[in-house]
Amino acid sequence: MDLILFGPPGAGKGTQAKVLQDERGLIQLSTGDMLRAAAAAGTELGRKSKAVMDRGDLVPDELVIGIIAERLEKPDCAKGVIFDGFPRTVAQAKALDAMLAGRGRKIDAVIELKVDDEAMVGRMESRVRENPGAARADDNPETLRKRLKVYHQNTAPLLDFYRDQGKLVTIDGMAPITDVSATVRRVVGQVGQPA
Image (cartoon, rainbow, N blue to C red; front, side, top):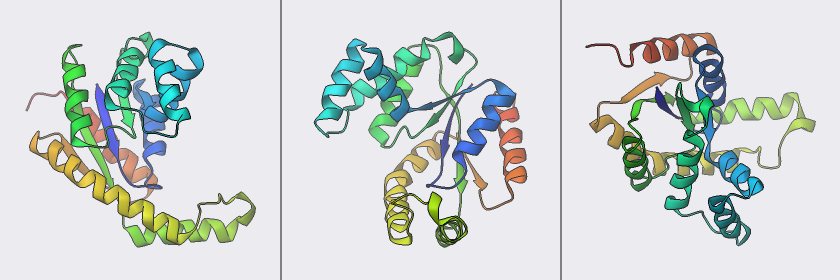
């Protein structure tokens, strides 16, 4: 079972991915982590990616897809994966679909954790007030609003792409964590079941 989790910064993707890892044995694949790991391992694709990242450029889609393909060959990915941070464009989504199809796999479901932007800003402000020493440099309302804007601009076409495929499920990410987890469990449980 291969899934994609969508949601803006702070929506709870990491929390839900951890639940799916623990309960279903699915592996969370963060493209950033995979790129760094491939570079550290010195694979051919890793060396090419490192050269691009060292220049400060974005790693081309074909290299990212290649690194994902390499990672999917590992035995721990046999039960399925959760894509986090990828795809970010429709072109990447199409390339991912093609690469998976070549391996007899497909994206089974796309789960969007829908949250209220201003509530997310409020949560971040509360965290910073409660524990100012733990705040990151980018933990401020202006930066978060910019990240939310970029997220919405970039993901809107992707959501439509997966909605058109009948794979998109939107969940209220503002609900309590246990309720969100229960809904995610229900969605994942229905994936692959006969209609």
